[in-house]
Image: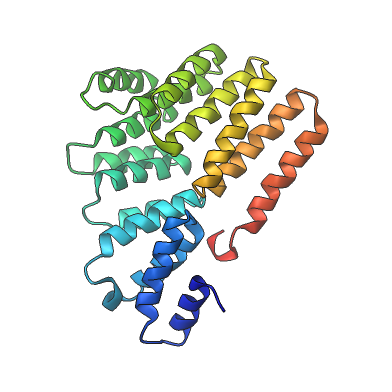
Length: 271
């Protein structure tokens, strides 16, 4: 018997009257199992039919943007999120992060500055990170200091932004300190995975290869559970560098092969 996702696809192809409900059920199953490629597929199908969405256009577009971001498609995610007239706080932050990942730093700053105030705290942190990459380090660091004093401040994100600056400055001790602080304040698997990636990078720069290996492995476990395969590719790339530093060329080759396999396993339509 075909699985739920295949049944939904066949129903849509056949214009079956139950295609909408089947697609909704398949989307929920994809969300429950953290599969961004399937989330994007079914969300796009729902958005193509206004009679299926019934006024749920905005949350579906936000869901699609997040799935595209996790699939390593930051420009597509940004395009989707920009199509939302009144984005939520989470979508506003994700728009900035998508443009940051795409390397469109000035565009990201412009996009966030065009949103109605007040900008959510998480989006303000993302704005500071965009400033760091846009050559506005003094303004960005001052903003992060100010944000850290705000009630409900996203401390893990603030420390991750400081870790980002340390990477740009090639400052291993400062990266270590910021990454450990981010790990202490991390809430949920996404923040913890991002913090562990920075912890591992700092350890590798400081020559503590076993600690870096452990941190990368824990990071990959979290990313795998969250379905963030594009991020996993980047971490395996970091592992390649780690193994080369440690002169373990066989392990480096294995990590490179895994990163390539992940890239090849991505659905062709999502590349």
